[in-house]
Length: 268
Image (cartoon, rainbow, N blue to C red; front, side, top):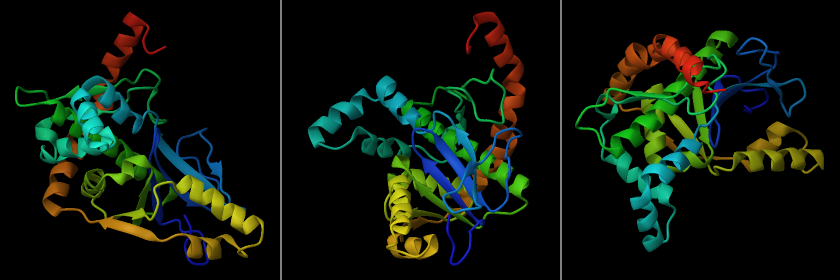
């Protein structure tokens, strides 16, 4: 993340790709999780400190395969991507998914959990549909990223003031609004969701001398797109669910996860 003239360590970057991540840039070596080193930044002397959800927005593909036949058939008729039609599911369900809470550990869990961690969905009732499952999935991914953001703030000693979101999942306005509501912060979307390619282009432009430094290149080659502000009522709901339910799920379910691993050998 680049500011005007210096590293912008108050901006958090969320990537909604196959792996969902939240990271900050620091001019100091910093391990968010002990023995999990940061990535060297493209700017000399900088580090990218990252927390991640390994399966991330791959889970949308999982949902499409297992539950999204209706959208796949409609997408062929309308000549649009099936994922765009999933926004209708998000709009059909209120914030909090009527009490359905999902922990998104469909693969090896985030770095702050043990290897036994597994995914979980709790709170099922007879009112719930696949739309509730989909919204709970998106909300669960965002809860996990908020957890990562809070750990980064604790380790760095600095509160984030801004959030920028990129990656394929950020193309959804509904997902962006859920992000703003869960984090309780305005989130901004760059003019392109393919920011990895843009970052490589910026590095190339500096390397061949088109721009004298990264800050100048970023100023000329990037600009913000849409922004999304939190809805106070929705944030209150999410904040209570996050603090009182989601943040306690892993420790409460961990003995069961360990038992599952011992009995079945899964996950390996």
